[in-house]
Image (cartoon, helix red, strand yellow):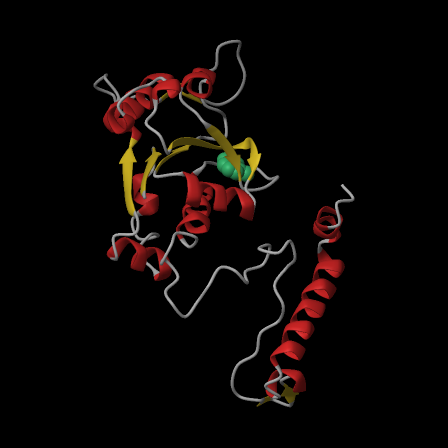
Length: 237
Ligand code: ADE
């Protein structure tokens, strides 16, 4: 998979993709990640990327021109109807579809070239959305000052789901949300830590019992903090 990030703050990403699973996936050729400065796609000598909104109002709006030129350069066309198969051009904004585990999976399985456009909180010229964007994504119901932190979240959520990214000893199959529930609790050595014990069931080696316990704990946790997930799982929504 290839991921291109378009931003006015390329420095923000300097090291963030150099750790853990993402670093390993990049090193192993599972994913290629490139960060691009939107100002490199401007035409004027001031490298202008934003301007005041038509109709008035506060703040600055990201201009269409540098984004169009960047997409032409990276994808080959600024017409989303003409994108090669597997190309997704994503605008990160609070107006987007909420990022969920199933959305990350959809990208990991269906995308081969993903371009992430980091918007600014004041907005992006709507013609970017009209002509270029295939998916608008939000990472939650709060407003960030820009799409950069959201791009990091999206990259992480997708890359760890790519085949072989987690390595042979780990699997995404038991992650929170993979079965519609939050994850169960986990324990490691020592058995007794400052007087707090590991639950007996985990020490007995009875795998059916362990699975049953894990499911019960996941259900209990989900009931306690995320009733909304249970409603969905039971088809009550
Ligand atoms: N940009 C600003 N806020 C955002 C959010 N919640 N999700 C994605 N991009 C954003």
